[in-house]
Structure formats: structure tokens, C-alpha cells
Image (tube, rainbow, N blue to C red; front, side, top):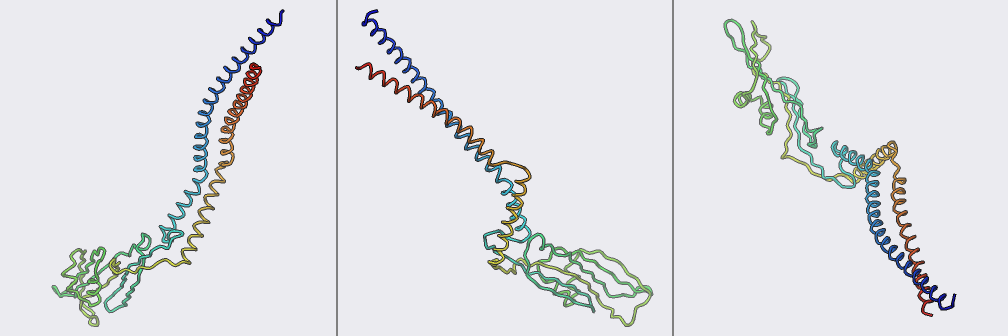
Length: 281
């Protein structure tokens, strides 16, 4: 075979090799573009999984913290890291009995559900004895007293103002009492027994929570929130770090694929460049 034919054959082989390398380079570039799209997709998936796993991990702490803070606030403990504004209302309590003991108590208290429920009001009035057919008759009236909004009834009871009671209170149960004779040592007059209670929403006392109380409440709520949340997280056996590593492993694998393809494309381009330089000589 002549040298001319040999050079011609080598030239054709080089051209064929160049074409194959360029075709392979184009295919790799196309695969790299597709892989970049896939990597972007996997990046979003990894981030979403990371966010979901983080929320899953923090869920017991968030729930326990919410329950702890809510429970403390519900029972008057207040909110952490914030000086609460405390409002108290004037409360009146009175126990009265004609010719008996009188107890009156005035205080300020909060109007939360656990301490604003006042005892039921009771009022019993015995009318004077009246003679009827050789016997003596009187009536015992038990009044139905709803929530009081004024001190009028308090004052009427203290003043033994039976006329105010008879004229203004109409809801009562009545019992007729009959005796044959009276005790001459007892006064024949109205007898009043009362247990009255009222919360005055207009008479209020406002002040800020103390720094010491707020610090103590904040520390206790923080410890309880983290402690209860940590116990839940431990017993449900959710491996947060493992889930993060697994999500990163899949993404890292896709990154390694594109690195390999880029290195392969770089090698092919170097071969193409080398062959083209040789062809110019």
C-alpha cells in the first residue's frame, strides 16, 4: 500500500473519530442539561424533605410549648417573656342573719373562669306572725336571686329594709307556717337570712405583673415545654439526623452523576482539540 493511501486512510479514521467524539460530546451536553434539571428538582425535593423533617422533629416541642403556655395562661400564670397586665375586680360577700352574726368581705380578684364563679345568692325572709282563728300564721319566702349588679339589696338587708325586699323582689317560693302560740321572749318582726355575693365590673384595679413572677413563669414554662417535648421526641423514636442524611444522600448522588459527566465531556473536548491540532499540522 502506498504512503498516499495510508495517509488518506489515517485522515479518514481521524475524521471519523472526530465526528464520533463530537457526537458523543453533543449527547453528553444534552444529558448534562437534563441532569441539571433533575438536580434542581432533587434540590427542591431535598429542601422540602428537610423542612418536613424539621417540622416533624419540632412538632412535639411546639405542641408541648403551646399546651404549657396555654395551660399556665388559662390558670392565671400569664405569658412567658412578657409582663402581663393584670386586672382585678371588686368583689362583695355578705352573710347576714337578723339578731345573729354578720360577715362582710370586700376584696379584689381576677375575673378568670376559675375564680370568677361566685357562690349562689340566697335570701330568706320570715314575715311577722299574725293571729288567725286562734292560731298564729307567718310565711317563709325563699327568693330566687340572680347575679347582682348593684349594692341596693346589700344595703336593704343591712338596714333590715323589708319593704324594699317586698316591693322589688317578686320571684320567690312561699311556705306557710302555723303555730298554736308564740314565744313571748321573741320579737315578732321580719327575720332575714341572706348570703349575697357580687362582682362589680366597674370597680377595677389594674397593675403590671412583677419582673420576678414573669422570670419564674418563663423559666418554668421553658423547662416544662422542652422537657415534655423532648420526652415525646424520644419515645416516638424519630431519627431526625438519619432522615436529613438520607435526603442529602440522594441529592449528593445526583450531584456526583453530573460531575462525572462534566469530567467525561472535558476529556472528550480535550481529545477533540488534540485531534484538530494534529490535523492542522
